[in-house]
Image (cartoon, rainbow, N blue to C red; front, side, top):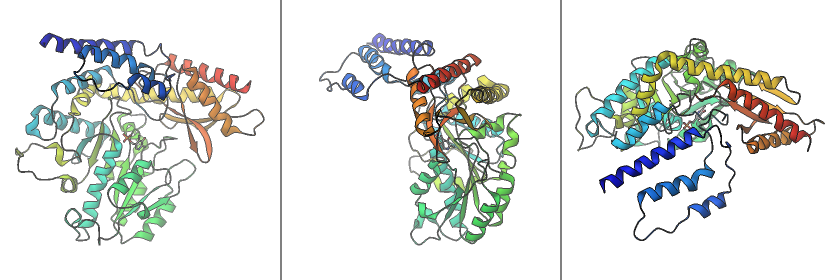
Length: 468
Ligand SMILES: *Cc1c(COP(=O)(O)O)cnc(C)c1O
């Protein structure tokens, strides 16, 4: 029996290795229908169970066609990082050790690993050393955590204990953000009871950064209210950064809490070439970023940092009778919204140790250089219009219909053809009322050759759609 149990792990290792070794051979888009998958996967629950090895073999076989090759170096859709082998390896161990990283007593090693990584991350991302941190599922959870801390502090300053009294009857919090914010900010607002009616959107300038003069007006209008200002580091479409130094100075005059959404863009801080884009960002009150995007940690992995640790823990801490508080040791659940939780620190630890400072800088720089080259090459092709030149690792292009009547429809057709072609993968989006193809390079695997393959696939698909 013991032997049979370890055999199933060996089978899964084989399936994992096969998957990774074939990444460059198989088509990136799954050529399968949802109905087909349903048909393959919907078994009735077996009465007496099935041999684990058979289950794992059949699972690998039956899901194979429906797996998107998003971890391949030729995938440039949404903003989806890959996974370093060292990160996968440590994540396997985290699964095997099956530690509950809720409190330190549940797993002293998980607690200390997170503590070490938290300090490393602040150093790499140039976030003040005195900030507190939490390891969460992603940037969405990081926003929710940070804004809970903001809600606590802003209302406490108005003599309102929100954790005790709730929001009913509380002074209304105003959330000011840019028209280009990520929608996860909005959801955090909804989850925290701040409500979408309390949001004020500030226009951006041509470059996609928040307009300082418009921000000034919005802050002045709401002065006196508890204000949260949400800025962005790395816009989803263009990679744009906000002018932190001035924006934060404006916000601070009204005692606003400033939060920065840096899901991927915060990693520019790890590069000497790009860190200037973040000038002044360290004066914010909270920051959110992801491990599963640019750091290439497997899903799910996000990080939140809060300049005022008291506000952070006051918003999240829930005392329990069965804890084992140890002086000077951090219980993770006081810094994130989860209770029982995965030991997410292990893969972060292994990845940072393995890459080192230079390795992380190189990852960021390389992805940006690939994006620049890809967009520059596309710019030379007739029928391609570049809408956003890369600032970091994001770019936008669209395709022009030869008679110029339906560029939106034409762009979507070319994107469909590229996805069908299977050599590479880009997604569509609507940006400033135009259909566009978004480019995002944030995978350690991407090489010059992958960029060559992407360029020729795009050329071929554009020609094909032109001629149909
Ligand atoms: C991806 C993304 C988010 C959401 O992050 P998750 O990790 O998916 O929760 C928020 N903001 C920006 C700018 C993003 O790119």
